[in-house]
Amino acid sequence: MRQYLLSIYQPEGKAPPEVLAPIIADLNALNEEMRAAGAWVFSVGLHPASTATVVRDRDGEALFTDGPFTEGKEHLGGFTIINAPDLDAALAWGAKLARAVTLPVEVRPVA
Image (tube, rainbow, N blue to C red; front, side):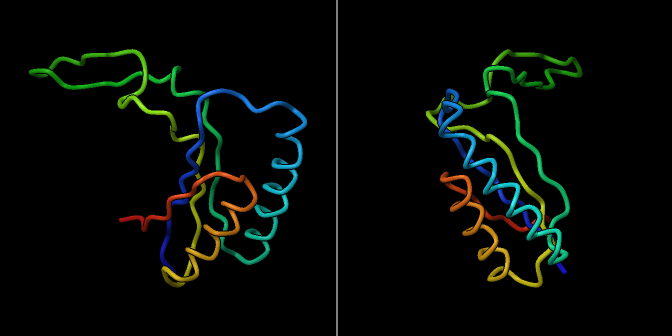
């Protein structure tokens, strides 16, 4: 089995509770399906990109910058790590995740 990263990209801002509630329910159901199939390893949601701090090395000194590394209309909102036998299986889980969260999902093998 190989591990894959399923990254969820979301627009800035917060969805209203009436929109978010069914998404959370679908996401919880999918996580349970992944667990039952032995695919689920770990998943997490992230705070808004505005809470990020970028750390760079400048001649051996840490340089800290507030905010996300890149400017954009979408940011990494959360991710799931799965076990899958191949890319096709990982893409199938990615498709289910995209349907559950109603957002784009990037599927990438873990090195």
